[in-house]
Image 1: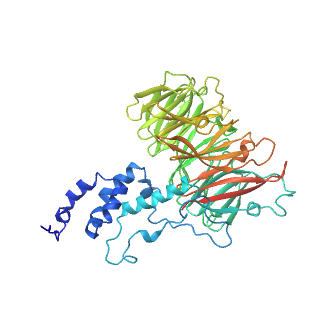
Image 2 (image 1 turned 135 degrees about the vertical axis):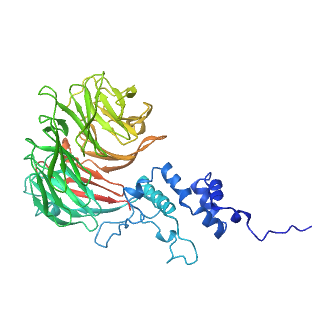
Image 3 (image 1 turned 180 degrees about the vertical axis):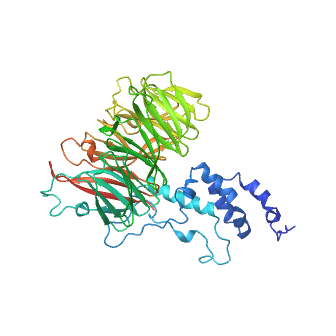
Length: 507
């Protein structure tokens, strides 16, 4: 007896809420397979309630807020630019016809927002992982040089710091100039004469505004498009070598810096209104004997670690001291703000995690294999970096070790890539990626990825050995955001090295 084939799909008769309850147990790959069955099933899987949790699981919700991949235009190289795939696999450019819109697939429901974000974020992450990118280089002429790159008679020029946003990149140079480039075409928009700080964290950009800490203790802001000076903020007595900038608030620290390490003589933390250029608050040390060790800033909260083993937390909007945390461990090396927490790194490789609201210590653990016993504040080889989820600990043993916030060891560089390193410094950390340079062995620079299961993995060697003698810290400025990174390469010999800035476009 022949079986009758039902003319209706029972699944299509279910309420949408029940469809979501059923389909929410599927992976992204399974949802795509289901969507291929028919139009009804495609529409059932095309729901933000299904795709947003998948984006959250991958930590891709940032591509809705920090970088809107639904609006971010892809980089398209011109015929005059050095372009093409930087690695293997698919094309650098996302296949935009895979996203259904009313204009390209008539009759089909448009791809929901969170599915579109998932598809684009997956492609972007694949580009990073597989070294697929386009390249734009700012040659030596963009830095103000004339004549031959290799036979320059100009004095040595170095890039002290880099910052960027959108299609703008700004660099602070050792000849007291600020340069602003368009990263899409590699042309320089403006040169600004200003005594920029030599600190690598003294230059930031947000909402089209450049904030620059200067040698004279002032902070100056500029329009990234026009180069116009907007505000000048005065108050520090020494060089402003580190600042934080979120678009409307600037937090600045001044002092003396050695090898990019904070050696604070001026222990005041200053908070500014970036738009008006006015001073909001000055957070002073409690006494002349208590020195500022480290500062962090996140979500309008300022954290300062001091030599009296205290962390003080202030509200950057009201100026109120929200919490004073007292550590019973050895002297502090640094402090780092996270989601409702503040982390202290102490001598003797001790880590403490505190609740910001209650001031309670919620976790205490050691970081084995990282020697902080003989820690020297002038030495950048011993430091802690925090990406919001993992701790990256570097020490004079020339290794970088990865830990979770529960103290679990995930992996280290020497295990992931066994070779002899001499002097590793982490230059830039962004989410699950960081740039590290090996300052002694010819200025080598690497891009690494961070994974909860796989630990540390080297994605790419960004910069080969530049020359035979030692490559000091001055040659290692780097910057990256979710879709691009920039670093500096130097050409020439002895005291006539000439910088070239290289930008990788991953989107």
